Length: 391
Image 1 (cartoon, rainbow, N blue to C red):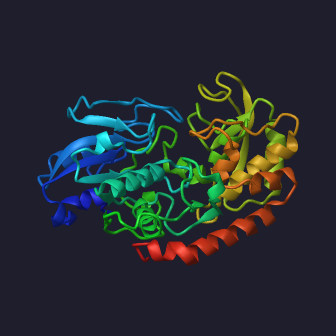
Image 2 (spheres, rainbow, N blue to C red; image 1 turned 45 degrees about the horizontal axis):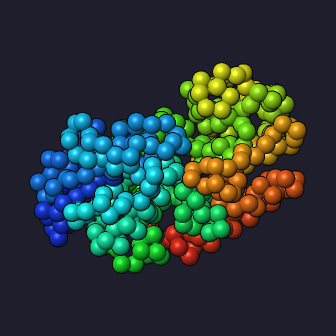
Image 3 (cartoon, rainbow, N blue to C red; image 1 turned 180 degrees about the horizontal axis):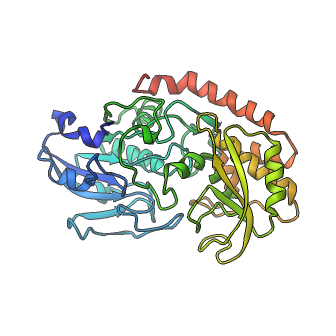
């Protein structure tokens, strides 16, 4: 079984930080191989003094759903420790939150996609710690959808947002620790960063190869399958289609009241998308978009995950609905994830080129060739020097 950074913390903790006062950034998936939560593990760790907890989107124990500005701070009932939200009126730890801390420890299960906000919570913590001279330790965890495959455009800085603060591809193919190495190498040179590595993880592993228990990293990623499709199907958040929130299969089920399922699936099959099939269906979300309304759409079935390209599939779904139902399909308008000006679809893509290509009738193949070139350049110039697991 793979050992995460949390599993290895007691044997790999740096001696220079023995006795340090520590803050901990965690969520419900921050567990070790025995399903003990990081808060409990670190409270019993004699080399540090745990002083404060910090919660990313959805909270430290999964208190909230998606895209909600959350609680501002309280005391954890279980431990009595102060809890600070990093998805509320501030997303970066404030001076008062960090006062008295020597080190901030990050232990969050990333989803492997640029939109997933945990890596950007980490980036803002890195910035704050660099400014205050506080050390930062990342307890590394697997990329659940493997550490080899990359896909999608690299973020254009003009489209910076909380679903993309620094340039990486949509499917980035790195662990949260490796992203930390990249951010320090390029942006936070003066930060003291320590990554406590995993043991036994290899780049080609999917989460179900690791032997680790799956704990949903957020309420709408209940399974590895939902995480597998998320790097593409999250794009539907930038449209007036339901991305399946309010169903038992978020990001796998999608549609809208104006969609005719069989016409949609017939169009999608024409694209010959690798490793995936589509099943026409009707569904009724219980919350979020179209709650209580009958929607037509489809369920995405991953048939070969090694061939499946989630971002290509998500773009194809948006293009198909845009072309089939031009009078009813709409781009979602701001605000979205604290962004109040640019279109949500554009900030998810990290560029407006894909939206303009869809509107201009470009074929999928030409779009894929463009972002494959971007991924290749990023891999050769940046990603390769930041990876800490070679195989």
